[in-house]
Length: 467
Image (cartoon, rainbow, N blue to C red):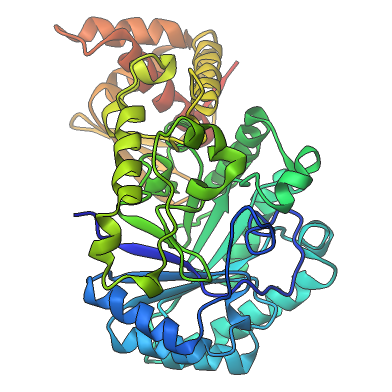
């Protein structure tokens, strides 16, 4: 059984904006999708009952713009009466004080507001003139109402979609999120579909540009304390893993970017009630060739016409799609996957990467990481004149300026530290010293990564110089 943990539900097709990067702009207009009228109140109630009866714990409401659904409050109230966790993604334009009060009263678990820039000049060029000031004002009022409420545990998030025009704004966006006192910020990759497909040349960025943008974000996180803010990247695991290693951070990533959960832990429902493993499975921009090869059987299954989600789960469509994912997973010819440390637990989108012999994003990150390591290995390292540390009874503690505390150095870090203290030395020489310490070293590449990561952390902490 693959009854989902989350159903992503386009609760309405209506929207009050014309964002440049909207991936859903054609889903309810183009005849290719065959979308019908959106569910009415009674049909939404029935859908929720079927969802609850199958013990699905969470629905995430999208659109369109969910707050334009006239019976939204009734629908949320019914979902909450069935003990379903309800989260909402909104553009924030109509998130007025009265709306916010009602959503808090209903017990909505999380509201995520889309904001694509830290200032009007960036955001409004993407989402529309005047949207920045409205969105920020509404987030501020929602936060004030939540602070006054002693009954709600609602979390507030911001979703920032990366496009070419806002790549250089990610660090400032982090600062704004901190000022707004939100709980989570999610930096999301653009999904090239709908209007984003029409404007692809204007919006799309290269893997190198994205990496540079996130490196600026990481550097900002090393300068200021953002521990009260959850920072999540909807990006390939290889990129998040690289950033966490290089900058000694704990950036979050969404599991769906490591293992495709479509048709298993996550399902998707259109505004008309059609159920799909995900929105890609009937997006002919991506799946046309796959369907022509009959890799899975696309069917029209509507929640109005089934007695239970188990019926959907056992359909030829959902079963054939899950089998398709397994076939893609067991391919052995992808170079970037063959020696990857997470190969056994990773499955990038099988539709996007279906015809590719490599995973381009991962290939870029691996090359970028290798270049960085080689650059650091060639450098000489020495203590800064103002470095502060304590050493007593074999314990070494180095002062961390950002957190205003001493951090303890353990394991092979002590070897590295003593070599740095003794004299100016090349990083590649330190690697050899650490390797010689082990009787059965875990491998040169692992030791090299550990040494480079440790030394770069000292550099970012203003303890050493690299030259």
